[in-house]
Image (cartoon, rainbow, N blue to C red; front, side, top):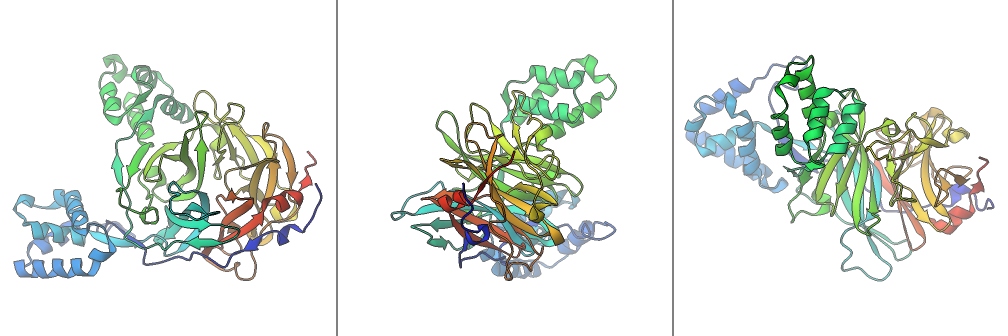
Length: 496
């Protein structure tokens, strides 16, 4: 392969962009006092004051609140009632409260949260499940985005775009109201539970007895039923109760959520739902995975963050409306930046990872639901990536090999996007690499919430064009296009 043209001239930036919109808000439970430096819940005193309001004042306050906020949220009064139920244990004689007063209590225990008021960044792109109503050469695309609000709390949002023909791009509007989804019954996997217990050092007699009694797939009710039938002798063992607590925590890491059928994709928000992700769901890398049976599903990896530790998680969905979340286990996923291949390769389930924090590696899922120690693929070597390298999403299949978009970190913690090429049948072989960045922050992209950073969580190829959505300094999301053949021609043979 010859070097032509210069890498940084290959990518064409599009004029369309997405910027953070502070009007995109959700509602969540608010307990006065919990946000103070010294937590002192003031809920009881507030409820007492609401209970003492005259009836006409209750009606006025509730009517005023509904008038101000009902058009910004879906079924707001149901949310107020739900939040009342969450705090009703603090209400003396709750049964005596009128329906209006209960709603008002719920209103005082509710607040809006602007999911992307601080930043919008790190998108990935996949083929949308709905391809109806399009013209020749067009493809509807589902975009996932990392949206960051107050307190640097990240959640996963979505947008919709249409690409083609050629380099035409249209991004659909993102009107509200937003919905965070509802928990639905989850199906758990015994092998994944076993892998989690082994990873966390809880492989003992109590855990073994539970695993030996569980079916291959089970729900929460079955899990609790089996826990209740463990032999009496196990309950007296040292650490038995701690093991039972750990079993419940490990199993609860997997959950499912669904959105109403009449919601649009851009209205759906995957919001932190477990302690492991309480401080954020970061950098989702979505991919349309086609199984060996030809059935396609949507998968993603993301980083769960609890304020101290990170953990890799997967999201699976048949339609981007129903989502199942599970932990990832094993040495290959003990850091950020895991990206799944879009199909099996030689019968192997593969992923890119960065287990050591600075090197792109290739990891394989073993028969015990654990991701193996990665094979190194691409380490920091050139000046623009000398601090660390990582992927910018799932590999893209081309006739020449697996095209992997990379990111590198250089001086002044400046992030740029590059590319490498892996062998189609043996992805542990690096065939070629781009000798310089494909895309670097320009003068309009260097300032923002996190300066000097261009970063993507995944692009796609349509009609020979690579479509690359990217976050620009966490201030906005931009789009670039690259002719795939020109990109491949600009790569140089790897010297390893």
